[in-house]
Each structure stands twice: as structure tokens, then as C-alpha cells.
Length: 246
Ligand SMILES: NC(=O)c1ccc[n+]([C@@H]2O[C@H](COP(=O)([O-])OP(=O)(O)OC[C@H]3O[C@@H](n4cnc5c(N)ncnc54)[C@H](O)[C@@H]3O)[C@@H](O)[C@H]2O)c1
Image (cartoon, rainbow, N blue to C red; front, side, top):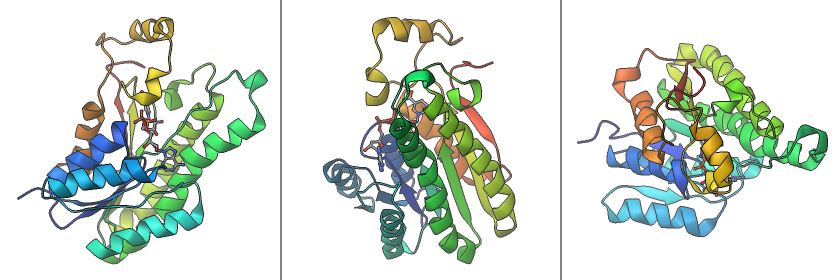
């Protein structure tokens, strides 16, 4: 029997990459999963994979920057008894130097990466409050702590997520809802495949462990934060970045 038997997790942006790995790892420990991503096919495929392996999952596609979609995604968890774990993982980049950044690229990154986490936390914390048990895990980024040229919108959103994490951790602690963030460094996924070899080599030179991370390197700490071993951790930002940012 898995350590998350009887729990229900919503994982956003779980059609591929880090979110998919998180969804599979929570499902392997017995959690029922609401698999969200922007695209129907990708989250449907991940839900099928979990169900075929003997787990429980349902797909709930849609843009989590949209409040109506968020209501639907959170409602999808009701068939498994209501949300008890929320992983705010959906994220996008629209990079460019701030001097040249279009206002719409600023707004879109803040909407998808930060506003979604607020909307989802607000909606999903209702069933958690009722159960007096909940875990919210926000996938921020090491660049939300350090800053990064060309990513003012993304870094602002990720830094905002850290403020959101700490505020919610304080608000929800009396209801035994723990809120933490994980700040990945450079993880090999479709998102980072866009970078040039020069950019990748530049980043590698800043990583003490001299390797890029994998999606599984992030799924492990998420599972830890959902486990009883982390029952006394709230409001923390765990850097999973191979030492980048020390
Ligand atoms: N890859 C890295 O190096 C890295 C580093 C730090 C933080 N992160 C963060 O980790 C998270 C996952 O990154 P990844 O590398 O797996 O990215 P990815 O681009 O491979 O996957 C992103 C997922 O989010 C979904 N998504 C995008 N916009 C959405 C929306 N509006 N509504 C719902 N779903 C949406 C996509 O459909 C996809 O399934 C992101 O928040 C990202 O900012 C990634």
C-alpha cells in the first residue's frame, strides 16, 4: 500500500515534463490524480497511463489562468473525495530583455505562472479545510530567487509564487494545510530544449554538481513534501538545483 492511499492530488501542467513525472510518482504511492495540462491529448495520455498501471486518474484539460477552468479542474477531484494535494506546476516562458518585452508577454507569464497558483490554491483549499489536511506545493524556480537577464516576467512570477507560498502557509497552518515551494534549477525538459548549446554550456558552468537535473529529481522532493516525513515543514522553499545559487 502506498503512502498516499486515500489522497487526491491535482497536478497542473502534467501533460509532459516535470508535471508528468510528479503525477506518475504521486499515483505510484496510491494518490488519485487529476491530471491537468493545456492540451487535451497530453493530459488524457498521462491519465490513461496511470489508469493502465492500476492507479486512479482523470484528465481535466484547460488553461489554469482562467478562473472558470480552475473551478472545473478542482471539481474533477470530487469524484475521488475532493482535493487533498495541489501541485501548481503549469508554467510558460516568453523571454526577452525587459527593454524590449511586450506588455502582453509580461501579462501572459504572470497570468499563467502566478495568477493560476492563486486561483487554484483558493479553490482547492476549501475541501482541504473541511478535511483539516492539505498539501500545496508550488513549483517556482531558482531564477525566482536569483533573477535572470531576459526573464524579468518569468522571474517576477516565480518570485511572486514564493511570496504566495509563505502567505498561504501562514493563513492555512491552523487548518493543517502545509504550503511549500520547490525551486528547480536547470531541468532537462521541452521547456529548456529551446536554449542554444552556448546558453546550456553557460548554465552548466554555474552548477556545482556539473549536470542538468531530471524531472524525477523534482518529483522526489514533491513526494517527500506530501509524505508524513514532511509533516512539520511549511512555508519553505526547497532549492533543487545541483547547488546553483549557493
Ligand atoms: N525545466 C526547467 O529547467 C525548470 C526550471 C525551473 C522551474 N521550472 C518550472 O517547472 C514547471 C514545469 O516545467 P517543464 O520544464 O516541465 O515545462 P514544459 O514546458 O515541459 O511543460 C509545461 C506543462 O504546462 C502546461 N501548461 C502550459 N500552460 C498552461 C496553462 N495555461 N494551463 C495549464 N497547463 C499549462 C503544458 O501543457 C505542459 O504540460 C514550470 O512551472 C516551470 O516554470 C522548470
